[in-house]
Length: 469
Image (cartoon, rainbow, N blue to C red; front, side):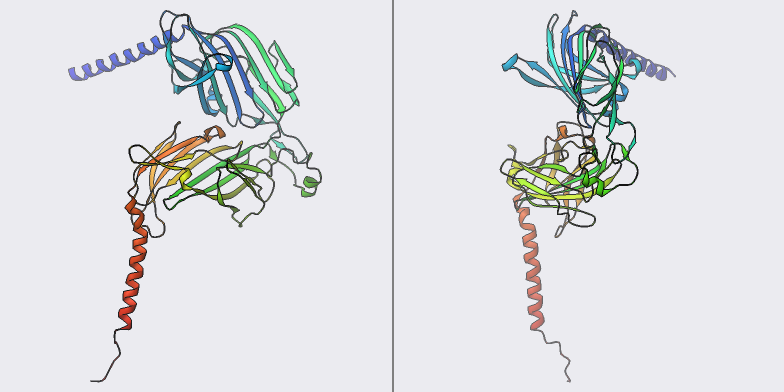
């Protein structure tokens, strides 16, 4: 009984210490204030990109080493990528140093506010200020309205946000600019001062706003850009030490915009290309590495010849065209494959390990990938594989078997959801490999042919006929 009460007392003490640390964290963070904030929201495509510039000042008595970024629960669900950097220098000598950013949970957050913490490179002393640049992308944040349109109607969407920047800190001065695809804006919420010039909406400047100030706005506008959503993408990267890197990509593509209603008329679609099916798309552009070769593009029926490859020593662009144009709610399934020179992507580290340096994400431009799986198939005999990424992704190991494999090939599997083009940055896969394993398959083939030769030779010299005694 005494042991149980002592254990209970230890739990109470630990809980008290954690609570005190969180309260001290909140007290320290309240000593910061934002002198000036500028937010630029880009809703030209179906991926919403937000660029936030914050000038943060320390008005407290102690140094601060981190800055909290606040988001509404709805926005936090759709954040695909978030990056922060500190600005060093001015004008032409200006440079950006990346900051580490992690999601953070705080007790008793008002209205379910979600947080990310940006860790400063150097503690911000009393009276000092620092400028932070924040970029984040939101997916599935443009809602079609109406949700169904005919072939001849344009696509209207609405975007919901706040005229005031949601912040954990007091903001002295702020303004927000929203850029739409065109000047065709049906309506927008006015929070004075507010103004619209052409394709840009401006809210502010607003001054002296307390923490967690919020003023909801809705912008209803026309957006006919392709809402290309890859519901599932599986990329297989197979390494062959004989000099080739083979890439195979399996796509399940959908149009994520307003659903098509009525009957599709190809005569009208081809006769009035500018007015009929304005929100549909029939071309997609995939940016591939340079020196690509052996490119193919096919679906379940077979090869699709309506693709065009433009390649030079700097880049390769593959323009693909599905068998039919995609309207809202329509889907297509296809496969892209190509080869690359191994020496452009496989290197040797200082400790003797080999590593693959390849691009993560989807090569098709302005595409949201709901579920991405990247499989890196290593040569047979590879040991201790590991992956290095600059963002979080689920990692696990599998084993695959191909022709002439004995023990199988290690496969590094990387999985991530809610992927945008900003994730198309290099990642590395390290592994150990002894060159003698390259002789395994040639020796196996040589041994098989030698045994067949010996067997046939022995058969020719054997007398197996039945004779009378």
